[in-house]
Image 1 (cartoon, one colour):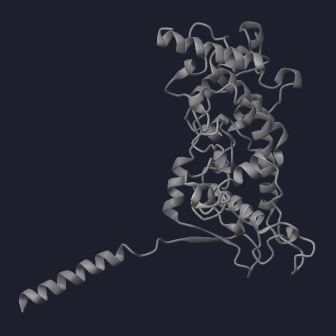
Image 2 (image 1 turned 135 degrees about the vertical axis):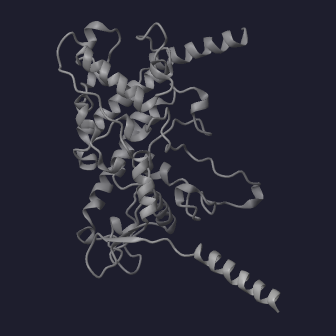
Image 3 (image 1 turned 180 degrees about the vertical axis):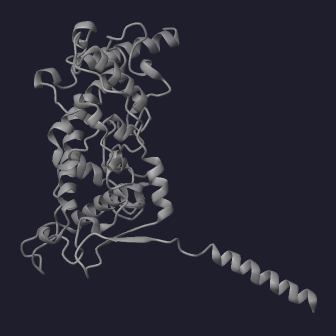
Length: 364
């Protein structure tokens, strides 16, 4: 009798402990839209604490005056930041090292003993990334505002940003498996839903129409197919995960298409989509010839940016920390002649240098 009572007591105690672990985490809600419409954001305090810890910014070193001598007069092959004083130039280079290559140091982007050389691909890429950063801060204030961006916004101390994307070749399957139409295969970009997994290629590299909702009950004027709707929802799932928000952060779900009932964040997001297209088409994708093979995707394409590249799970990258104010040279775009595109000569030089390195390594 005592054994049975003891066994029941232990079973009940274990049950209580197990059930306690099944309690849903406490969530806090914040209203961000019209009352009575359910427009609110839910956030778990523990998750927020982890995000805040992951979005701390490194302290900037003291600013230096813009006094001569200037970088372009002291160093060779300074194509973007030549108008900075040597002290300012060195300060920014040190910051970039901390932001992108804290372990490798200067040699991650520079040839040892010849800092002017373009024979290393990371030097060519980083120059173009500097130009892209200046372009964003100078021309995309409708999205980044006065907060701006720096290399750290995306890199966070890593050589390669944690959130980049390549064109998806899709799963390997036998021909008899049928036509998947780039969907029905759970993928992180679509929040593991059975939505199309190529939405980034279609909307952030291509310029397919995202607005597919009709204005009438019957499809008398709207010729967009259901496939377009599925692609749009896939992109929206990506944006939701990238910013750590739900649909009502931008939309009033009673009238998704109505801009007058949407939040201001929807306008900001629209500019973000346009900005991502601009960066992928004009800056990131054209770098493909510069990258070595191991840095390319399965289809041979260059790494590209999406919403998560900067946001990394929060609606304002780094919770709105305005790092760029400490580096004003990143807010002024260089002249068109100084910028240019990645030259075929630079790409060829990098490729030739790497080919020679491989031949020497292989004893050819």
